Each structure stands twice: as C-alpha cells, then as structure tokens.
Image (cartoon, rainbow, N blue to C red; front, side, top):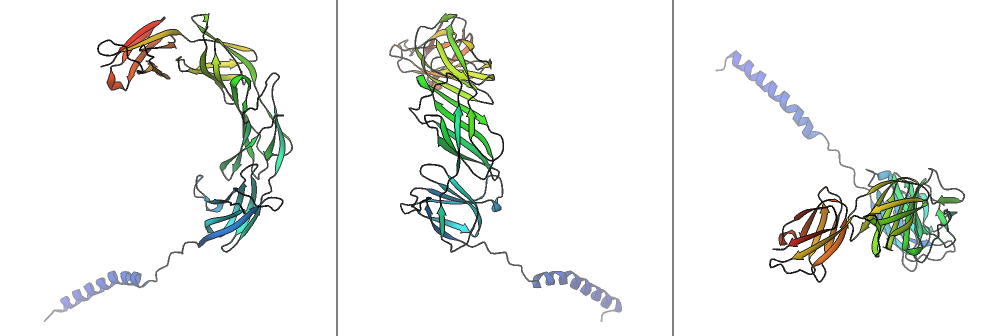
Length: 377
C-alpha cells in the first residue's frame, strides 16, 4: 500500500506532465493559416495600330510593371511581336498597372504609362511617337560622309534603369529626338568621316526631359600624329588603328597610313593608343589642344626567324610577342621564308611559340634593330 508521501509525489509528477503537454496540445489544435494563393495569370491578346489606324507589322510590344521590382535588375516584363495584322499576345500576365512600349520595325519608339490591364482584356494600342528636332553642330573643317549609317544613341533614366534608343542622322546633320516620360541623361553619336575615319563621341546631357530643339555639339579639334622610326619618317604603308579617349569623348581612326594620321580629338587630358599588327606600343597620356602634333616613335625593327630542330625555316609558325613588363602583345605569323617583322621600343621582350609546347620562350632585349631566332622542338 502506497504511503501518503508516494501519493503526493505521483500527484506532483502528473501535474508537471500535464503542464508540459498542454501547450503542445494547444499548438496541435490551433487552426493552420493557409498561404495566399499565387496571383492569377493569363494571356492578354491585343492589336497595335499606327496613327492612321493601320496595323503595325513586326513591331515589338513590351509591358513593364515596376511595382514588383525586387532589385534594380528585376521587374515584371512581358513582350511579343506583332504579325502582319498587328496582332500580338502577352503571356503570363498578372492583372495590374503597366507601362507599355511599342518598338516598330523602323522609326521611333512610343511609350504609354500607367495602363490598367486586367485578365480577359483585349488591348488596342496606338503607336503615337513624339519627337523634338535635333541637330549636330560640328567644328569647321569637320567633314562627314554618310556612305554608311550614322546615328545618335539616346539613354534615358527609366525606373532606375537605363533605356536606350537610336535614331539616324540625315545628311544635313539633323535628327529626331524621342520624347519619353524619363530624363534624358546621355547621348552618343557615331559619324563616318571621310578618308576611312570613324568618330564616336559621348555627350553628357543636362538632366530633365527633352524640350525644344536639341543641339549636340561635337567638341573636337584637329590633331596630327607623326609616325617615326628612330627619328626617320616612315616610307612604307601599314594598317593602324589610333584612338583618343577621355571622359568627354572618344575618337577613332582606322586605315592605312605611311607617316602621318590626321584625326580629331576632344580638348583636354586624353589617352592616346595606337594599335597595329606590326607595332607594340604603350598608351600615351596627352593634353589635346587645337593643332596638337603628337610624334610617335614606333621603335626598332625586330626580325624573328623560326626554325625547326634541324634549323630549317618554318613557314606559318605563330609567335606571341610581349613585353617583360606587361601590357599588350602581338600575334605574328611567319612568311614562306620562316620570317616575320615587327616594331617595338627599347626594352625586354619575350617571343613565345604557339602553342607553347612546340618550343621554349626566347627572352631578349631590344636597343636597336634586332634579329631573334626561335627554335621549335
């Protein structure tokens, strides 16, 4: 027979057990809160028309919903292209408010903001592009050729993201500036110049929507580059690419020259780079002013001969030439006599067979016209 103390102990343990179990029982009996269902989605058909009510063929229709942005790189976006009847269909659309963009096969985009789209709707969109007149202002003597297309690329600050669109430049240097509901932040133009020169210029545009005529002034001055070798003007023609780059502008020359390049560059501090399949040079920091003449010494003539294990010349051998201190490199190929020529300033260099398993690197120094032999295994 249990004692009184045993009955008390049993009562205490039973009470503690109930205290521990009851909260769990309440949790098990609590109603579950269901997760909200995913938003309903559906396909939205529509038709895109021009201002005269004609169907827009091969136009791209895009919708954006910035309310669902989770980062600067993500947002709700659906798109489709129209057929010959102007018809399109946007899939997986959630009902809501969208911005709508129409990108025709040719011409300026149009944009509409805050369009309510509901499931079951059929959209009728009218392409009504808006534009302001614009023109390029070029310096005296800056002659342009429009054998190839020249254009202006506009960048707008839209919903925390950049939006780009380009328009062609006519022969009289005029163009149309698209009007969108966003600030215009930057414009870039590419002009094809006479004598094979090309120029790409960046313009910083004051913040604010476009209004009135837009003038983009090309801030270029004439620059002359004289190419020399050991203080002697070059007497042979070779293909080069020369460029000036700064925060304000970028200009490029591509063509065949002998000893002089006439090009344009933006005034102020700029970096000059000359590239060729034959010349290994470093970049130059230059203060550009009107009439600047930059003398570039392409260095010394370097002759590389490639031979096999029996000292026979190897035609078509590939060699990588680069400086010991880093920078760019040249990729050279030997001619039928197993020889290739290049030009490089004084310094230490490495000639490496390609692929490298064909032979060992050859280290050498250049202080004048130099001949180097690379042996293949």
